Image (cartoon, rainbow, N blue to C red; front, side, top):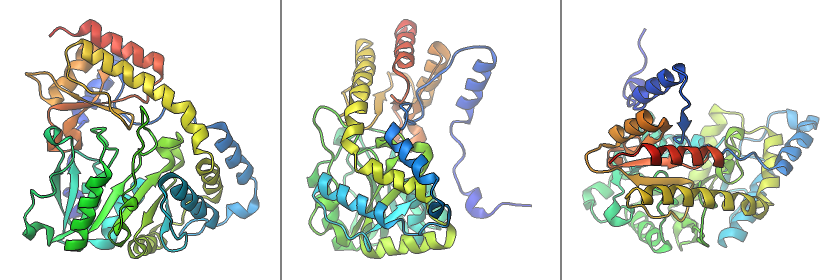
Length: 387
């Protein structure tokens, strides 16, 4: 028996060697600290859990949910977008609920891409942008994010012959893995290009609320004309510490939202209504959550920056996300430095090449680890650094 060619075409699991070494070290009794995964350690706020429990007891929530999402959930999304970004949305035509934004991002190419079509995906970037494209039969092209350009793509480095064939451009600001941000002027440029060449912008806004020092990330839908060419994905995972709950949404261009909803109608049965009601509670009380988690992440960010700066690394405190994109020292590749930290300090980080070839020269550190554990990891790195 053979698997389908589309599965054979998927890239190999880059971290197999690291995972093998981690398992071996743990089998030897070593305490490994994992700073590789962006999964919030802070519990979901109690008022969200309580709303879930309350709604889970209601028999009417035990039946099949709406494919598009509860009216109340989509209306909560609309109210939040209006309050947060000043963007007015139609809950019927411009909002669709998702089983986490990852699901919607993966399925978007199914809506827009025919075999052989081109898709530009941020590199380094969230691997699902490329994987979803490949599964739909499209051809992912790298959209390089380089340090010399503040990790913003050079939109004018591609010739007209490429832009004329592009169906989707995947963007993500605040960015995973680089933690970089984009000004509204950048979104204005890409919207103008999309209108000129008739492609769709898919903006992943999952980290918009994890920000520091007064920074507030914009929505691409704030740009005039963006609704004609853009959709935006958001998730409750990062803001509300709800990664396991699997709830998110997409908003924007009504034709794309309708197509995404049509795909979902045929392959899933929506989100458990009780979770959607908990999502309503969350979106109505965002500020309560942020005032508790942002100080924690700020302290952790500062700890990592101070640690690596004291060792001679050139690192700037990020203004958003819960990642730090750390340049590797001379003489190392990303994977070699990852292995060095694992061997010397028993600390796991993610090599930049796990997010694309333009991630070479960096590692990603996640600060979604309890503060005492993160402090121990930084102390180990300080004590074992011998360069």
